[in-house]
Length: 399
Ligand code: HEM
Image (tube, rainbow, N blue to C red; front, side, top):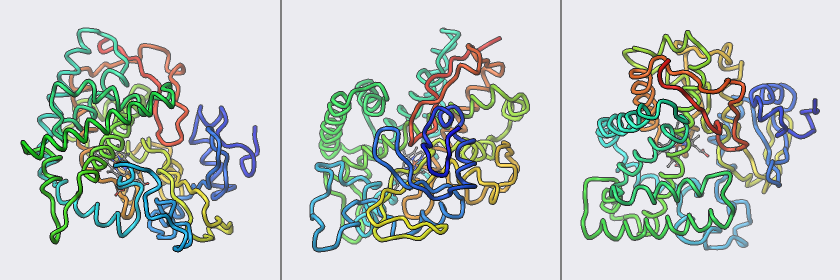
């Protein structure tokens, strides 16, 4: 066993059971620099109180330029093209302005109105699944569902949805080459750019048209900013929600009491909220940079360092949640950090909750005896720092 105070963290032990490693780290080295699996390093923060505080610490920035002395900062974003305008890459005041404009379009009413479309998407996917009898829950249900919901939200025409899905899948697929990812991102950016232009000529009720119309105090989003918003919604809203669904189903397959709680339940709201805490679909918040030396738990994170807030570790910290390894939908869940905290708090949180509820209700309402199609110990996690995701989950729909 490696020495977690100083040795490597992302070992086979971590990928087999991230929570065991995170729990030991939280005790012996709650703030430490770790080598990343793909090279480079980051400071990993694992205690709930530290993670909550760090989420609202203005000394932790999203834009690397903020770590440089003002006179050395380049004026242009470090990432060229529309992508540089994405919410998660920007700090105030740029982020504040973008967020204000997009929030005005992301209304409770718009999200609630998506429910029938989400139910329809779930039903169509399950009709197809029923004919097959056995499916990979990841690729045949949990991934296409949020993908189609985002198309619906943005107003992507039906004919374009397959191409849209393929590009976005390639961009995040562990098995795609860098070249393939690059190509897919370029195709997607080009497509979104044309779509925004088309919506200017022929507006509809969907989100892109609303983003075009959005204005605050005479200010409006530029063409590239709207393209960037489409990209971030797609990236942030897709694999995240699919992991919520897959990880929840995986847990239900292993626990009869949980299944009993889900099958036939009138409302899955508290169950899904606890799944968010318990499975942390976004295991680590996307990176931040220290703009000055930061003291945390007796350690100094140096200026310019990359900092990663471990959502998974914080959400299972016994200092905040009693018996954190137990799924308990009746516990006090306030303050879990599955959706982050502070100015970058997940914009799609209510949509994700709705999708999670609809996906699980539809699945277990129709297939209450859903069973694993392979021994459960053959189910493995993907080696992703960012998301807590199963590679595949083969299931049989009926006994
Ligand atoms: C931000 C988690 C679904 C859109 C975030 C953050 C987390 C998160 C942890 C904060 C990142 C940080 O502070 O570095 C999740 C989880 C989801 C989910 C667990 C599903 C279970 C969605 C959906 C959408 C979405 C469905 C939209 C369609 C966003 C956006 C941001 C964000 C735009 C950036 C907000 C900003 O920078 O101001 N999400 N998310 N997310 N999420 Fe989600």
